[in-house]
Structures are given as structure tokens and as C-alpha cells.
Image (tube, rainbow, N blue to C red; front, top):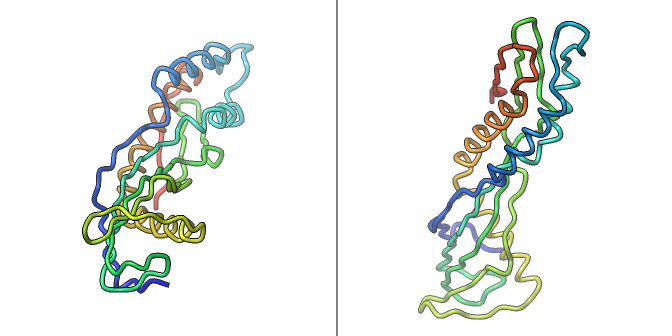
Length: 204
């Protein structure tokens, strides 16, 4: 196993956000659902319930996932690495990180004047390293090949460690929070019987 003290991990490279939700599609989906399920809290119409809100949130849970595409660079030197015989080399790769909230765990409180939603903490759902994107360069910047399947597994693990350490995970989580609030407001618009919608986030 590689000596961590002999590795230099640089989270350099470009990182950019690609929101999983296409705005136009989200608007169409939300508009269609609201048109079909508008509910009022007076007269003979159904009474607004937490079950009603919960079901609507669960239907769009996938739309609230934020995605980060990360291009990473890991540098190794002054040590022997199990899956590479080179003494010094660099590894570049591409990875995708997804983060969001489990909307099914949302706490819902309804009064005569307000609907308060307390969303669970944003968490990272997955870190997927594209093994086909991994490339190695030696100290002379010349690309060298590697084909062993065991090498692939070890390289992917190293890349995942680098992503978790150097990618802008907090920025991704903030994007997910903003995405959640925007979609939920659009989803529930016109369905709360005139109540004020309050969205909170569970404290860390």
C-alpha cells in the first residue's frame, strides 16, 4: 500500500457545476402537477395535509439533485506505489459527484397561516470516477499505459480519495440547497390554501 506521506495530492484542475435539472423540464413538470392537484383549505375541498405535501415532494426528489463534474490531478513522488513501478508520476481523471437531500425525511408542520418544511441536511449521494478517463504521466510528462484490472480498482480508489479531499463539496451542497428551495416553491405554489410557505434546513 502506498505511503500517504509520500503522496502529494493536488486538487488542481477545473471544477464546474452542472445541475442535473434542466430548468425548462422542471418548470413543465411542476406546472403540470400543480394544475392537476391544486387543493384548497376551505369549503368542501380536501383539507391540506402533510401526506399530500410529502407525496408531492417524493415525486420530484430526483430533480433536486445537484451534480459536480471534477477534473482532478494527483501527484506522487519519492516512493513506491503498488500499482505503478514509476518512482514519480501524475494521475489525471474525471469524476462526477452528486449531492442532495432525502425529501422523504422532510419535517412538515401546517397551521392555519403557514406551512413550514424543515429539510434534512444535504449529503453526498455518490462519487463516481470515470475509470476510462484515468491517465498517467511520468516525470518527463510522457503518457504510459496500464492495463491490469487490479490497477484500475486501486487507481479509482485513489481518485475518490482525492475528490473527497479537494473538490468543492461545500459549494455543491449549497447549490443543492438553492435548487431544493427553488423547486419546492414552484411545486407547491397555489396548493397551500393561501398559507405562507417557510423552508428551513436542519441544523448541522
